[in-house]
Amino acid sequence: MDTSADQEQSFDIIVAGAGVTGILAANRLCQSLPDAKVLLLDKAPRPGGRAMSPKGEDDWGYGLNFVSKKVLNFIEHSYSLEPDLSMPESAYEHKLATGSILAAGKFQDIELADCFNAKGAKALAGNAAVKEWPKVESILSASKENEKSEVSFSKAWKDGKKNPAVIALRHLSTFCGMSDIWKSSPLAIQERLEYFESGLYSGPWEDLLSELLSFPSLEDRLESHFSCRIIEAAYEENSWRVLTEKGLFSAKALMVAQAPWHAVEWLDRKDCPIPVLQLAMKSKPTSIVTLSTKHESIQNLPDLVYIPAEEVQVLKVSDTSLCYQATIDFETTLNAPAVVKAIKRLKRARKKLEAVREDLKSTREHIALVPIAWSHSAYLSERKIVEKLAEESKFQSPKLGFCGDSYGDNYSPDVNLVKSLTTACTAISEIHRST
Image 1 (cartoon, one colour):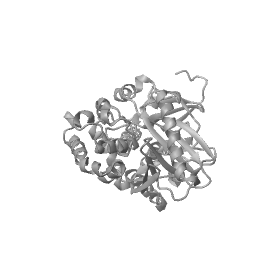
Image 2 (cartoon, helix red, strand yellow):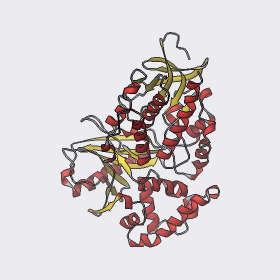
Image 3 (cartoon, helix red, strand yellow):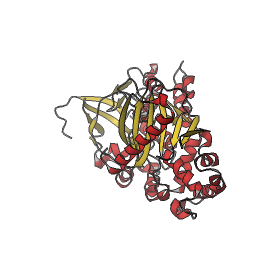
Image 4 (spheres, one colour):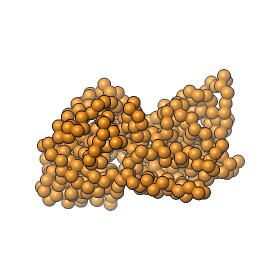
């Protein structure tokens, strides 16, 4: 790394990525290491990552601003370590609770907690799906007992693709970030359905995340730089040297709070653990295409509307914004054929919703591709790569840690997030305490 012309700023720990995971990591490291000086970097103009909610007329969300109670409990614990502070009760107020299925020009309301079981199957495919649903449950539950001999869902399912129960499962899986159940691991399907069934809480999270970065005890010890893209990073002479658009920084330890597909773009290959490189090179995340719309006001709309004919879900991301989502296999450009087809589905879905809710005519729209919407593909062919990564001793170390929903073998993203975050922070704390 040629940095001779750059003036270097030194820290104890650098955290790369200011999404939910990176912010929690920076906060936790500062709280557990009272003498450490921590730097948080992100290329975005403000914290939040994929969980950011739209702010203002020229800002657009992706409808990914939801977390499980497991993450909220972690945040609440972080607050409990700060004297005279407690997490605002409002954090638990925005639980996704109501849903509706829009088919043949009519809404069928259902509680979201019931969407991911036999009740959801009935709402999507009628009474016949309920009768056949035990067959689905049998395959999914068996996958947990026989992980080593697991086969793809297409091999486990013996009743054809037109069975009402499997039609319902296909729709539920699409919303849960799985583009093709037939290639998928039954265990992945089971764990992802359980994640949604457990209950999720939506943002906005900006105020909460910003407060985590400004605890009084962290003053003068935690520094944040936004709109600061990392160009390259390498471990040289017992120190990390991180070159960014805003200058050169060094630290004893580096915490990567980004998905591996982003991290390998700037992290020196010689320093990147083999399991992380394998995940980035041999597996692909799942993408979503979004159509975000602005409205004068959104009244009396469920938290989630699903339109089966287009396999599109619609989420309310603010009092004036909706987000239409279509799940696809990994893509990186809006010109890709799969993305073009998804955009057509999104526009047809919007037309169907606005036909029955004329008050929801949009004033503005924005189309986006989110390449890494779900870190783990549910495909069985990629499961072994994910399982290798779960052997945490192979990629967590005192000088380099990785945390986030990518780093683990569970298909509930928040399980991976909390476990990897806890493990990485513990490992990195060792190098600071020993010096």
